Image 1 (spheres, rainbow, N blue to C red):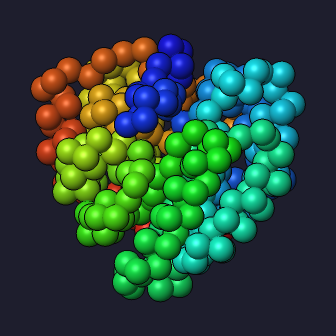
Image 2 (image 1 turned 90 degrees about the vertical axis):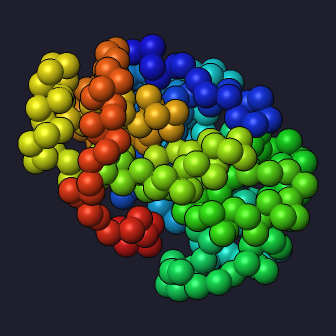
Length: 281
């Protein structure tokens, strides 16, 4: 399970574990156990958000794990609804109080718009938000900052005035849906792409072609889907609540051949899914 401790390097030289344990849609009542199980299995990167309503439980699990804080990479996110400088500072403090840890490893702007106004233009407001993110970063309370759900235009908007450029863009990404324009722009600008819903929320499981390739490597479809993301230089955030699934998703000691990666990269989207909206629990 070395994949869990192998790292990518962010543009500020911070090392980030290549696989994250995602907690979207894990209710507070189950989050503590799920995160504790993930840490016990060997995950060292935990992803949460203020909008998920489970930060307190995630923080408690990190503290209860007995693992040195420096060995765990914790990510959280600023709500998409927050589009002011002062609001960003306020919500960051709320997140830190919820988590009750000394520092955060990565803090992301959850979306370029409020979730109720998906697709609307908040370019000006996002510059204020990013200025606040840079202020937070300068305090040392967070090791890295970035964004989520930002397309090329949104990234260009922030980069035009940024003193510190985003280190991460976390987007929806899975076999058949690899956002080539955002991914290429991010990589060209040394911004790491993270993949939420790398299993397409289960949508890949019934794909015959993907199943055929998984059998070839004697792995499950989820294992293949997670490894595919990593081999594309993207960081997956698989989510699970049952210990057998948490353990299985961590077994990634195999390599997909170049030919099979091409097949997977050329696949059409066979698992169209609803856009990730953290307010829809």
